[in-house]
Image (tube, rainbow, N blue to C red; front, top):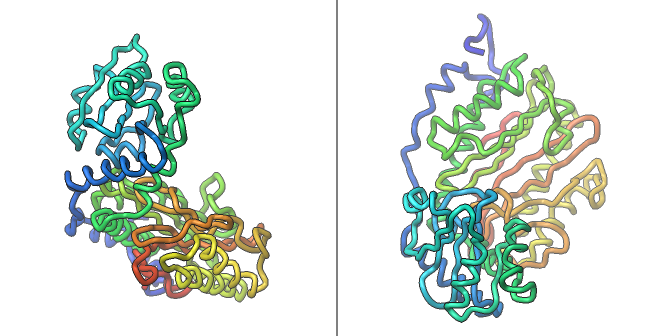
Length: 410
C-alpha cells in the first residue's frame, strides 16, 4: 500500500489518483476551528428546558450521562452502572449527582454553574435526587429517555411510579433545532470527513482491502483533529454493498466493483456522517441506472424540505422517484429498505427522523441525513448520504452531493 507499481494510472480524476504518501501529505490539523459552545448558550439551553418543563407539567428534569448531559452541562461522559446525572428544577441552580471519587474529573469538564450532590459507593444516589426534589418542592420528574431502566427503578423506589414521566418532548424540544454555533461545529466535522472521503477514494487501487481503508480513514480523522478519530467506519466492496451496514470479513477490491464508504467523526461532540458510493473502473448499465436513481431520489428529498413540511413528506418524495423507476414500492427490494434520513447532532441518530408516520413539522435549525439507499439483493447497493439543515426557505447542504458514479465529489 505504500507505493504504486511502475506504469500505474489513476482510475479516474478522483479515484485511485493518489499514493498513500501523497494522501498523508494532505493531512494536517484543521485550521478553521469552530468556536466552542459559549456559557451564555449553555444558560439558554437550561432556560429552554425549564420552559418546556412547565409546558409538560414537570417540576424537575433528570438528564443522565450521555449526549444530553454533554448538551446541557458540557460533561462528555458515557453512562455506566454509577449514576452521574444533572437535575434541573424550575427554581434554583442545576444539581450534579456524581460519585465522590469523580468530583475532580467532573470539575474539569463541567461547563455550567451547578450545585453538587456527591455519593459514596455504598450509598443510593437516587435518594439524593429525591432529597433535592423534596427540598425544592418538586413532585414530578421528567426522566431522560436514554436513562437505563435501573435508573427508573431506583427513582421509583423514592418517588413512586406516578411521579416519573418521559422527558423526550423536553430534551428533543431543546436539541432538535441547532443554533448557529452548533451548525458551525457540525459543518467543521462534515468538512473534515468529506476530505477524508476524498483521500480514501484517492488511494483506492486493485487489491486494497476494506481493512486497510478503515485504518487509513481513522488515521486521517485523527490527523485532522477529530475528537477520537472515526466514530464509525463502514467500507464495503462489490456484493457486500447490498447490506446497509455491511457484512463481516475483509474484502479486496477488484475491477468493476462498487465501493461504499460510510464514516464520520465528532468535533466537540458534534457528528458528521457521510456516505459515498462509487465505481472502481467502468460501471455496468445496471450499476449506472441504480446510481442515477439514487442521486435523483436524494435530490427529490432535499427539494421537499421547507419549514412546516412534515418529516414523512421528505421520505415520500424520495420513494416516489424510486417507485417511478420500477423499485419498491414501500420497503420491498430492489428498493429502499429503511427510512430516508435521521436527525444528527450530538448523537449520530437523533430526532427528527425522516420516515413515514412522523408528522413532526420541519423547522429552521433542524438537521438530518438524506440517504435513500437502494439495495439490489445479492448484487450491490448504492447509498449517497449527505446532511442538510433547514433554513427559513428550504434546505442547505452541509456537503455538496456526488456528481456521478465515477465523480463522487463536487
